Amino acid sequence: MMNADKQKNFWAGAIFVSLLAIVLLQNFRADSFSEDNLLGYPLYARFSDVGGLNSGARVLLAGVDVGRVVGLELNPNNLSINVAMDIYSDIGLPLDSSIAIISSGIFGSKYLAIYPGAEFDVMQSGDQFDYTNNSVDVMGIMESVILSAEKKINERRN
Image (cartoon, rainbow, N blue to C red; front, side):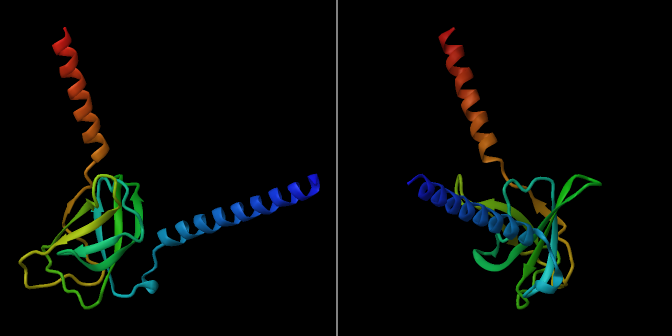
């Protein structure tokens, strides 16, 4: 009986380790960016804080899918985050378009929202957005509100 339990534990552990390895390999593969794997054309943006944005996140224009995040990389020179996107080839974005990191609800996943500009010339393969807005730190805001409320409660007690 003890031998059968050890065998079950072995196989359960082996399956767990295999699944963990697959997940880790997928994450490393998703973060490795190669222009050869693109369906459209690459665009780039630089942020000082991406706050939970991940490879594979959606890129939306007016609420419609226009691409995917394909890579995130820390720039060691200025400690900014370079974000690489794959934009569908039939989408032309004005040169002065801006991009922001948006959250789907309070605890939802992050995605990129593009706000088109007014230029007639469009961005080309390899261009970078000049106007970016960082992710909002929802947890930090909630912490500030809670601390402020606690401070007011304590002041009223005294």
